[in-house]
Image (cartoon, rainbow, N blue to C red; front, side, top):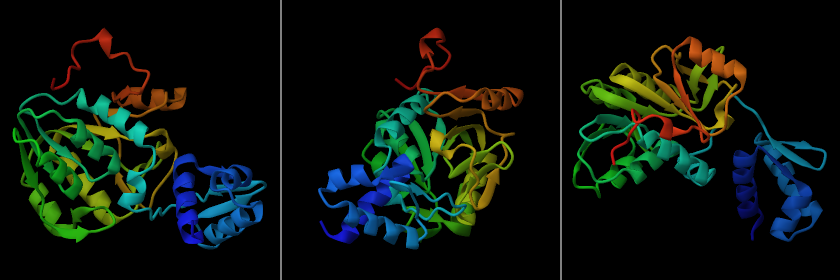
Length: 266
């Protein structure tokens, strides 16, 4: 494997695990410790990683520039399980918005072919749903954003504003009690703001790595969030924060058998 290819794999490992060790990487790639140290030095010089004793950690930056294809291939099983929870809140004949995140793409992938109206600015979501004849698919306008594999900008906002949704399913780059929901670009934040404004209910789908962090652009507060769907149980501080705002909270440990109110589309 070429050095550049190996470094890209290490980047993905860092995005998923937040840290790596020289010993583990040496064994994984079957190369010397010194080779791995050089790779980590390259990633450090690029501002992506910070070297530590015996390895490296992901550099925590306000601006995260990972693109769609990189993000699509990390935490795959987690995103699939998050999508399965989100799907429970979708019922036949709903009008919904599914955003451009790799997390929400998995919601589109597991939807059954049932009567739904779905709006999205994500080419990947639109392509996935185009194979399901009973789902009516609506696309936004806008300029093509290759990194997000989605349509963005004023055109996307104008077309999105013409619709009204029963439910919106959105993700984000970061979540903070102090700074709310945030994203890495104005275009991302604007689209999600508009989706929130156009929806009766808003489901924020975000794994544990998004919590207690802040990205470059503020997207929204928590006032209009209906429910938060995540993977790991939240600490008492977060539970109290959400309860004070009447925001429902679901994670992988949630027992849905206790109530029939949250039945999905099947």
